[in-house]
Image 1 (cartoon, rainbow, N blue to C red):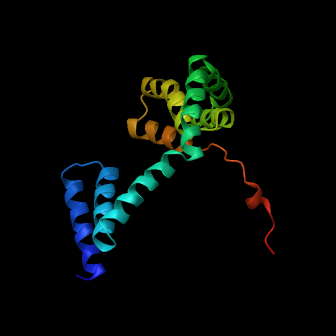
Image 2 (image 1 turned 90 degrees about the horizontal axis):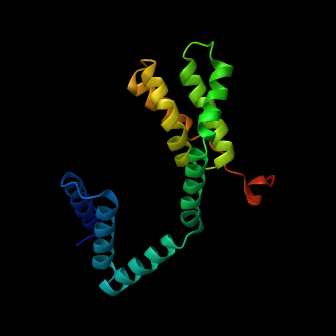
Length: 166
């Protein structure tokens, strides 16, 4: 059987698993491993599966992610999110859509402190979303502003990215 035909079968099986509501990650894991085992060899496929899982779970960014969430949760529990949102609301309180603008500014300020977009969205969202609902903002607008502004965190450039390429 040709490799492209095996690939098409894999895509069909993947779509079927999606429609059966199997989680995307597990669906891709099963189809990818099965395809690799069929094309190369079962021993190579299972060896790749074990080493790939090890390397994915031992990645530094995956180990740092829970610490950013913990920092965001601690900042929220200390009331930092409330104070940042109150400060930005006092600055932008006279603008049209002031709560949306204040939410975006609070996300930018909180992200500068925390560094995690997920923690920023959670911490500011817990404060800003109830305030926006109380002011009769559309739920789609309120959640959209918070979700999009939560990604304003700053990732410092690596040394390799700062070099000038000639």
